[in-house]
Length: 338
Ligand code: NAD
Ligand code: WQD
Image (cartoon, rainbow, N blue to C red; front, side, top):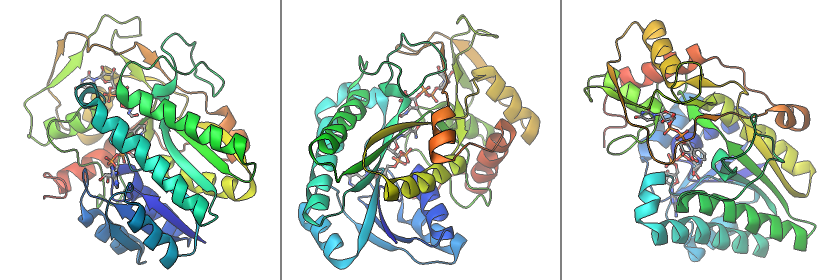
């Protein structure tokens, strides 16, 4: 069975390619490398001892997609390709809507033409409104996004849902990720953000390796056990395995279905800092600063539906996430080094 992985050179995509190859799927990747490196794909093949096909280019390029579908008997698509920086999306809304929405529109158009109607989409916990009770269930309220990035996820969910309503032979799986962190246990692939990291764990890792002086902890006056923000951090390898489960589910089902990929456990910023220091024996200097605009106090998933319907659940601990992040960062202080 052949899977087309858009954005397969990226952080989550590269880890998913490893799991797919380990399960003997044929893997075809399209990525324009706007936020990644071809070196990640080289290492995916080195780690698994298996080859994948790589097409460098943009998912919005209909001619290239046509060539890929002509040249490969694709059964299912996992669609990771997208821009993901929340803050940047506020300043570059058109670029985000163009990239993230047009990629999905062109992709599904070409899929339809080739009769491939199984799509797994990288959605996000950001589609849930801020006024929901915790834990978030797939039936919790969505919409009311506070930035263009979030809207692209919400709108793409609407596009795929509409497609499945209109044509009962379509199957779309919307995977709502919580906070992916960690790296492959080998330390060969991991998260390699460009510029100053927006997210907590890559920032901590760069402080630990000496690339940044200290972490700013955004607020310690939230209504949480230690005052700092609480999130549902999930190991990227668990997340990648969730995609394999979704591919199996999609093969047997039509219609549009959303699933949370989270652990169901919330950890605070200071929980992460102290666990990282403890398991790795390395200091992470930090200071408490003002809250980051747009942040909420607490966000965690109910993973029940994913466990019951996909037969998937996260297995790795916060210690694993901290250890594997550091193993990747210390062996690759400059990431993939390009
Ligand atoms: P990433 O930036 O590492 O990976 C995305 C990949 O898509 C990159 O390799 C990039 O080069 C590629 N890409 C972007 N636009 C493209 C285009 N038009 N054509 C071809 N390739 C393109 O990000 P990631 O963390 O691996 O995230 C993967 C997906 O999961 C994204 O859609 C993201 O929005 C979503 N997601 C990520 C998180 C997170 O915290 N990392 C959380 C929820 C959802
Ligand atoms: C986690 C916690 C911060 C950085 C974002 C997106 C979301 C999803 C995942 C894609 C919060 C605190 C952070 C720092 C800090 N992405 N923090 N100092 O905000 O939960 O989610 O990434 O879909 O859409 O919004 O993740 O890692 O940025 O923050 O104190 O330097 O760490 O305030 O409590 P977030 P994050």
